[in-house]
Image 1 (cartoon, rainbow, N blue to C red):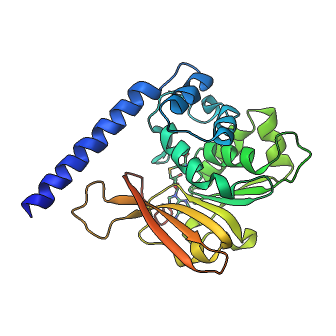
Image 2 (cartoon, rainbow, N blue to C red; image 1 turned 135 degrees about the horizontal axis):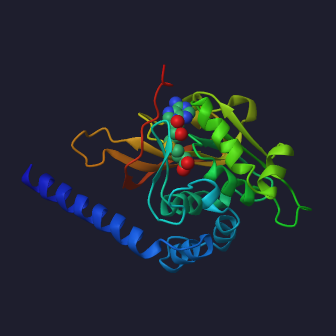
Length: 254
Ligand code: SAH
């Protein structure tokens, strides 16, 4: 019990230090500087991820402190996640976000990560294969916000008008069956469980990045990122990656 407490305390202090050091070192004065700092700190290692994040100005999605490496409120009790968390999600999913791939972004909120995913699944020159990204949120005002955020750039308008990106109001715990199967599923709010409908909607092979509330209520932060791989033969492999703190996936507000 004592050991567990000490272990928990040290995990908390490491998590807090990590949070502060990232915010301190990675924040920038421009989108380019922010992404360069994330790359310098090895939080983004993949060149495609770097290019995709360079291609989306966070000022269109997090107007108050766009280049700070910290979560920012976007209204309706939601936050845009910190840039380093967006970086982690992309790094884990990038092999399933090749040009032509299909992705589902559950809890799309500001729409920022949906846009970054769209940059990855579409060919930079526009003449290669083009995939599709579906962003799902259960708050209609946030679905509208994501749409209007993406319309702030010409490239964002093209993604929406061509149907390469769609924002949909729905309960993301059920996924979006109409667009399945997905090569990649990202969940941007903490689930109570690995919702089976989401796993069903993964392609084989495919990968899901999902924060899940820990079964052990004494665990600090109470949530872990799980990476769920559906192998080519349909078998499922799950791995608990690191501890996080996300807003929960819930019923829509009344
Ligand atoms: N990836 C987003 C995160 C937004 S915060 C970003 O970085 O901007 C989490 C989002 O999950 C909120 O927008 C919230 O409305 C949404 N959400 C919570 N429960 C949900 C549910 N059951 N279905 C769909 N979206 C949900």
